[in-house]
View (tube, rainbow, N blue to C red):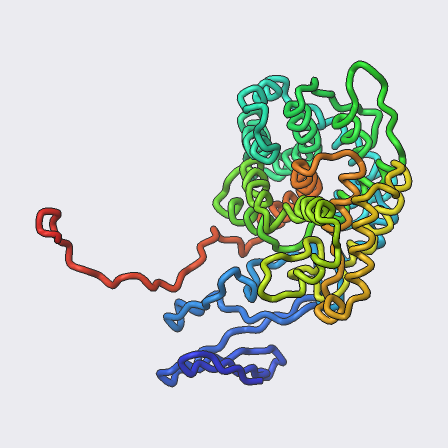
Length: 448
């Protein structure tokens, strides 16, 4: 195989006598440099260019790092062309249909699914960490009442390191374990408190007799004045939502957590950095954008006009919740989420509400329209999760917070893997400098 690059650089893949793959880089000056090619368990091979600069005085140029493997990982595998998502080798569909969230959390953190005794111990460990330091609850009063919940999450999660000094030493495996459990356990409590603060209701403390998802729904929607009945269909849907968003390989927020962690930052600071990255509308805000889009179409009253706009390459309008940067096939998470949407809408009696009728009409049109089918713009997980969360009573401004609750366990698993990786170095991307060359300095009084 021969790949031509700019300046007549050539990559030539050869096989050594030991059957190890080698990439031979031919430089313009005629010299050749060999780089090993590594094969993963599954997926494409990678050319190891760690020594490229030291041996050739060249860098690779890869904006967005879309063709760069930043680490080795055993946690999550994605095949976007085939629509495959695996956690530790298990299909996401199987996990979502057969596990609760803490079972999947155990898998991500410990490499395998738990047996009954292991699950009991792990569930108890997480449950007993759901309370937060009482002084931390007063921290919320420093925010404006109308502060975005993600801004509150960034601040409060970052502040955890000021309250839990006994789990910030990243060189101590036992402290890393405690920090991991605390983060998975406390993030739902903090998220619920951020919501309650924004609407002026009292904080609801976690209950040890409830499951992870039941506890979160109770902290979100119950009030001291009356008993809150937890609908098992909604708690099951919450489990699925959390599972389907638990990890997704080296995306922007996960890479942010790893990069922050590479400097030796404490785990609470690293997860706060991940939350900040997730806040970006191009990353964690897609399901919120779906609801805004549906509202816009509903006001207009003509779904076909918006379909036409989406097809027009000169129109900036795009159908939110359709297509995916990674998946060029049906998002495997969307299949599970569609079933969940049907169950939730039935449970809350909203199948006949105009917004959800519109969502189903839009889904049907997109799945049957040649334009969307040809371009593989299938409904993705964000399309259905936005509909489900809206039906369950979550305000759209809180959607990204729920994403953070789910993704925390993935961030924590990735952070632990990074810390234990013997090849781990502080992240230091390079650049292609296109600014001025060195210039002579001119004193202020002599500049025109």
